[in-house]
Image (cartoon, rainbow, N blue to C red; front, side, top):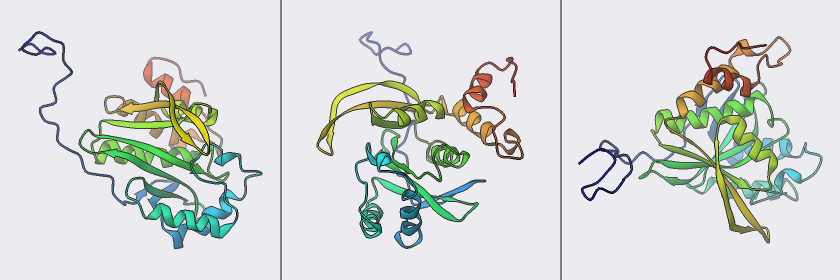
Length: 246
C-alpha cells in the first residue's frame, strides 16, 4: 500500500501508528515569570476577580460571554462556585505575580483526549490583565501545557464572529482562522455565528518560539515598553534572514 492511499487506491489521511489517547487536562499549576495559572478556587480568587472586573467602566466585556455581567459580589461568587464544580470546562485563574491577585480566568473545554483536541475558552480577562504581557504569558503557559506536557494535536479558539477583540487576539497569538460556522449557537437570547481558529502540533514550535521570544525580558525596556511587537517577532521567525528593527 502506497503512502497516502488505501488498498482501493483512495486517498487517505496521514497514518498515525504510534498515536495513543492523551491525558485529560488536570488541575495543575503553571508557573511563569509574570503570572501563575492555577485551578480556580472560590476562597482564594473570587473576591479578587470580582474587584478586578469591577474596574471596567461598563459591562461590555461580558457581551460575548455565556455569563455576566454580574449584579454584585455575591452574584459573581455564585458563578465562581459553579465554575469550580466542572471538569469540562476546567477553569483556571490567572494570578499576577506582581500583585499576588487573581486578575482573570480561562478554561480548557470541549476536551477530546482520544483525538488530542481541546479548546481554550471562557477567557474573562479584567482591565488589569487585558492587552498586557501577563495576558500573553497566561495564554502561552496553557498552550505549552497542552502541547508539550499533554501531547495534544490541536488547540482551538472559538468566539462569536462579531467579537472583534477576541478575533484579533487569536490571530495575534498565532492561531489560524478556519472559517465561520453559521447559526452555531443560541446564547443570551440571540444567534451566534462562531469563528473558528486553531494551532496544531506541527505549528506549535514556531508559535511557541515567537511567544517565548516576545515575552523575554530583553524585549522590554526599563519602562516596560515592548521593543518588538509579537507580530514582528513572528514575521522575523518566519524569515530568519530578515532584519529585526527595534
